Image 1 (cartoon, one colour):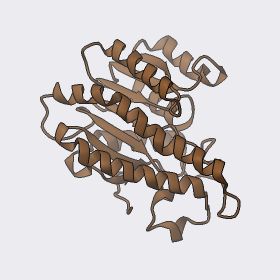
Image 2 (cartoon, helix red, strand yellow):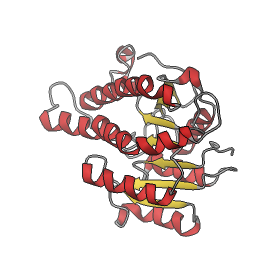
Image 3 (cartoon, helix red, strand yellow):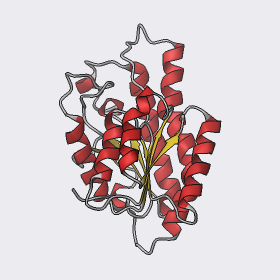
Image 4 (cartoon, helix red, strand yellow):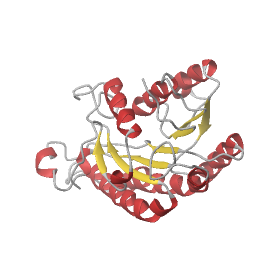
Length: 256
């Protein structure tokens, strides 16, 4: 499988599901990143076991402790990555970490909404802010014209459930806090795309499909392998026309 052509990639929420499979497939690509940073909240615990196993046989994989809801943790992670990259920049930041809770309008409460926004919106915002200097360095150091993941990119993993236009088709799963927070993530991405485009940083939202993970459930349509194969193929082909776009795992543009 072809890679992204990126020298360095960082994935949050990398200890399970889509995040872990992104790490696996990037490592196994024909052109793996020289630096691949797999971030999770507890890399030394039981949930980090599979990442540690991968790192033992892949010297280009670095596991980084990062809690996207904790400012100090984010700053420490950015410093760690900067130290590893030395004078190089970060080509791709994939904000994959997120939480999902199946709550209706009648059952959703303050805690559900606060947790959803803290993890699914504020987390990607703060992580992007912390790694922006490294993304800028990658963009400035590239001779490429136009936008691409091989130059510099922020990829935010969202969901079809965030699409306001498609709510009538997807409302069989109310998931109120998840829908609202992911819709806000879409807005964040659009703002990032307008702010960073002139600096050479691509910003795109990706819907990974309904995937058989702890979050998606076993009734989902896609395996993790199928979803991630699609995502990586899409990322490798993103260009200027996808700046601020909302696309699915097949590359189809989705309505906001």
